[in-house]
Image (cartoon, rainbow, N blue to C red; front, side):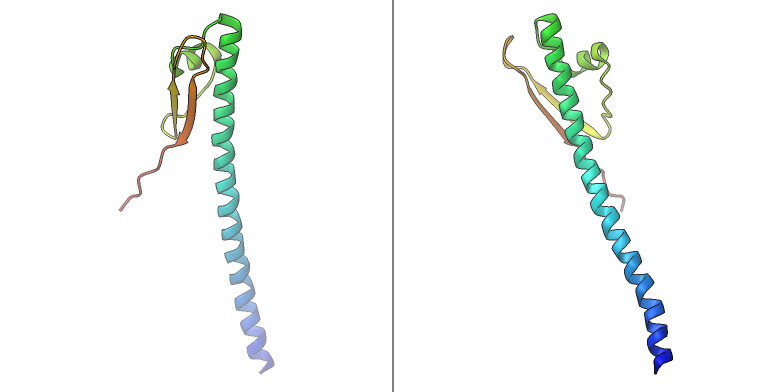
Length: 104
């Protein structure tokens, strides 16, 4: 009986530990994705404000920010939406992760 319990423990404990590691790594990965998204949006906003402070106008588009302010955006991974309302009004900036297509 003691041998059976020992065998069960030897099998169950590593399986449970592996399961917990998988769950923890998925949660950490999800947080990192959220932080990357947030950091990109903050970086784009800072570049837009820097442009306004130095040039006196908001940048006309995202390409201008990338070209003149050294921002690098992974366009395959993120969609950056930049909408201008007027010359002296802060543009609307939204950054979203592009959903990956699942392979069948």
